[in-house]
Image (cartoon, rainbow, N blue to C red; front, top):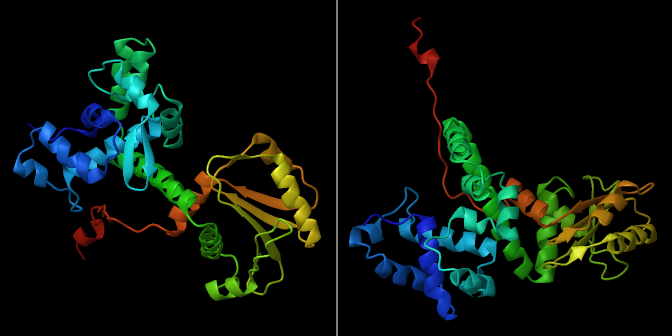
Length: 315
């Protein structure tokens, strides 16, 4: 048989781990290769980047089910079925479609972030088959450049989610260093050495660090970094930070967190008199890291070539 697509791997993978045991990518790939009766050639098939095709598809199947909350990760590199996953299996589905994953808020939020919509959702919402066909035609009318851009956005969204998971596992002081590295790469503090010399871990007063806004140190930016998992940061935390700026005679601050900010917190910083506080939540933090190349590396570069008309002009 042909190597199954990642959406075809989802249900068999979820059934495989339904015993409640803890699995790894390697162990699940080995068992699924047997389940799908893959030939030696299919097992050894690779992408142009050198990655195993089947291993890559198992990874995506696992990732999408993780986003939906069907799989838990108790420890790094290990995963197991969640209560939501068990409930889904009890429905005796023939396949876990995108429309099925769309029932879960986590997957809905993921699609919204990556600016992608599920075609299957149209059918599940009771739309006619004509609406589905029109949607398929709309997607197929995208130019190759548009398809590349859409895929690029989705890959970056996925990478941001993976980065955020890693950030939440980091040692707090290592996280503070990462924040410093990011601010330097974004153009603050001058060189890394200058930033380190001018950054103080105060340990009190509600300020985690002080960094130069310019090379000469004429302006200071006060930094608060919170490596929190899921706690929504509300207005009281931002008010404390704003008060701490007064204690240091500062007017500019950056509040960075791996979690998120409440609407009240975001509204509060907009009306602060004589102060400028920038809020950076986990998703924005991860996107900035991708933008400046911090904690990520280039996996493969695709060159898109065009016709050089000048070459064909006769002199």
